[in-house]
Structures are given as C-alpha cells and as structure tokens.
Image (cartoon, rainbow, N blue to C red):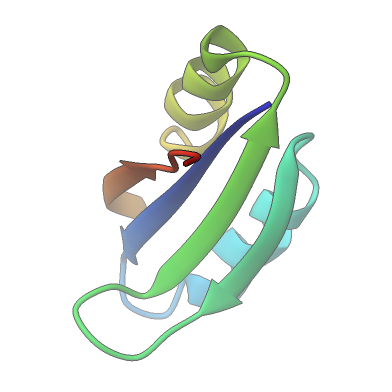
Length: 77
C-alpha cells in the first residue's frame, strides 16, 4: 500500500465543501480541517503509487476551491 498526506490551501470559505467532496474520493482514509498554514489535511492510501498519483493529481487537486497542495509521502521502516 502507498500512503500520502496531502496538505491543502483552499479559497476562503470553501473548506467545508472541499472536505465534503474529498470524503467521497476512493482511497481517502481521513480528512480534517486544521489551523495554521494549511486549511485541510488528507490521508490517502492506495494499492500502488500510480493510483496515489492519480487520486491526488486528477481528483483532489482539480476540486473547485483547492488553491495549492503539498504532498508528503509516507515511508515504512
């Protein structure tokens, strides 16, 4: 399994709708609003890195209201 954490900046006032849309995306394990430099954090887990890339670039990043993202790939020790 491939896991990533996606930090999202949204247009002001769109956080709630973006969170609701992200919840319906396959592979999303958790989504939370946060205080600080980012508005939302999302945990995504998919069978392969290619699936992960597609979920983030083609589904999450293209949502209306999403301005920027920062993706942190998880590693296992």
